[in-house]
Length: 101
Image 1: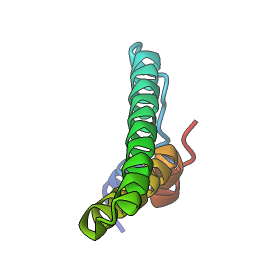
Image 2: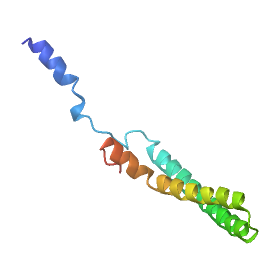
Image 3: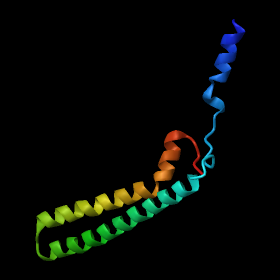
Image 4: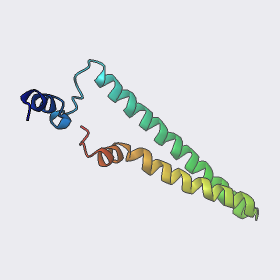
């Protein structure tokens, strides 16, 4: 086999490449921005969850099945979204196989 082809294969091998999360000076800021967005999204989910629970109770008191169905759906969606948002880092880590620090 040609040694130049062999050298090119070794140089182009991405197996030894590891992500460096501190290479760029703005990475810490991006990390804080991501944490801020995650916190904001979770707070919005809590607000919507409380509102849906109150409206669900009110719809049951007023015997409104349509409102109960809608607020029950909003309640479930808020719980699922909060789980996805809170586990976003873990989901990405699981999907890529790269532990995120």
